[in-house]
Length: 216
Image: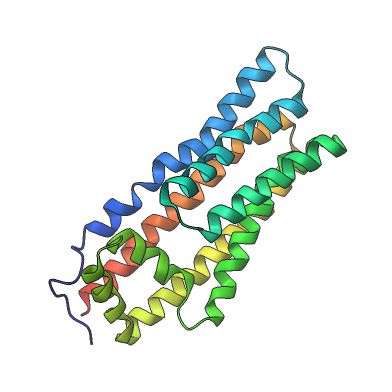
């Protein structure tokens, strides 16, 4: 069993690190909805307002790649989907496709989470290590050492599976909303769906990891 050492992060650090996700949710979810509302209020066609709403998430992905100077797979995937969806929307003129473009992103991310369960270490292990240890080699070694704990391994696989399933459900829910509701309501509800699912997942993951850590 792996016990807490000075190589390990403090129990509160995981929640503090994950709290940094909230500004990203504003840029990727709330800001597009606000931009859409402003543009349509001033008479911009729905299609163009929806395409413009994809600019903040795309710029955020691009900025994160430039700042980190590393090829982050999820950021690259999101940026690629945002670019393709904007191009295809303008070519096809399909408002429905634009409304569900986030579903392609979250659905793909969900599949990546589930697919990583076939790898030696699931995706959530690497994600939580980045939040907890950052680029600190000593903290990274401490986090890597926890993999020897069977309960910790099970928790990492279980949380990875839950994130994958949750994002697939979110993607499906957004498609359902786009089929049933007018564009304005979909744009308003979509960020609430995104933020709600992500915040619940972060809270649940933090509790699960702190629980297994308290068990030694």
